[in-house]
Amino acid sequence: MSILATIKDHSGRIYRGIQFLLVLSIAATALGAAGLVRDSSFTSALIVSMVATGLALLVLMYMRSSVVQRLRSAAAAEAEKHHFLAVDAMTGAMTRRYVLEALDERLGTLRSRREASLLLIDLDHFKQLNDTFGHQFGDLALAHLVKAAERIFADGVVGRLGGDEFAVIVPHGNLAVINKDARRLLDVMRAGKSHEGKIVPLSISIGVALAPAHASNTTELMLLADLALYESKAGGRGRVTVFDEEMLSDKRYRRLVERELRAAIYLGELDLHYQPIVDTDRSTFALEGLVRWRHPVRGLISPADFIPIAERSTLIDMLGEWVFRRACADIAHFPGLRISINVSGEQLKRDEIVTMCDRVLRETGRLAAEFIIEITETVATAATPEILKRLEALRGLGFHIALDDFGTGHCGINYLKTLP
Image: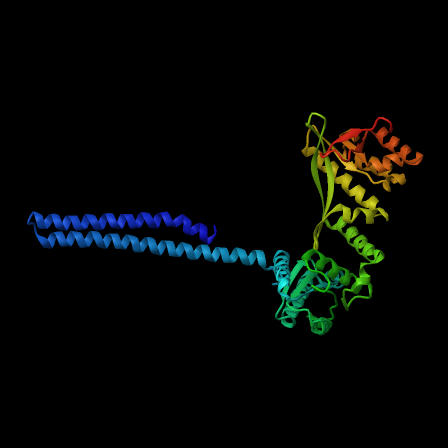
């Protein structure tokens, strides 16, 4: 319960306590007056009045003490909750959520001509460190990195984005100072960390992007710093790279997305979201599976930003299999409905699409009739004999084949009668 909620919870009790005090005080005064009127012992009446008033004061003091104690407890709980949400328990760095909020807040002040720098830091060969020296040493190495970064970037915010990835937000855009401090951090890590009486050298890679020089919002700044970090790794690791415009070239960006998407498939960063598919009477008869990428640095990424890149490599086959396996796992949660999965034209150019679907169905025990293979109108109109043959094979397995119905204003599907 928040502090404000606690105050609201007790305000009624305080008010009722004051009412109680007033009633007792009035009663005590009345008793005293009655004693005087009846010519009774004034001392007795005064004693009754004092006792009643004293009891009322004691009750109010007790209630005040109880409320203050509960408010203090609520404040302590609130502070503990904030600390839990803001601080990474293992390394002491700020959490990813806190870092993104801090960066949003900092970039929101750019209208006043304040600058910011974002450094993305990766501990090189982290898995190898864990495998060689144990996970405990790996954790100590991460904490060592955080302490060194906090010491060198004393005016900045150091946060852990996940795993061995960290971010530093520096409240200025002085590139010379940033480079100098980043190289100091490199040197500190190269000096190593003690392990069982020996010094183990450590290596980090750093990517830097500046605001507003390179970008003026969190998403773009994260992307550009990530591109710079990728260049540091591709250039041999253990170095600092500042973003430049050439990194936005199609080839470099595609390499970055391919590498990260390949890792995302294995690391569980992908989600399959579902939206209803309705027929002509507006009743839901199926669900369309839409893949989303939860990037550890850049947040939720739309498929429009990574599917075209995946289609230019064999990654589209890996991605397609992941989507179908997830749909097979999820279909049990939607009795009476089919799941529609989008199949790329690039997938249909290879025989692997048919063998993959058949294999996954056998491994998961699902029926092809529970699924709809959805292709775009563009793929359908440009279908070659080879693509038509594969669509026929998929239908032979039991799949329904459908055409994505663009331009209707709602998610509908027209079943293809002319295609297999």
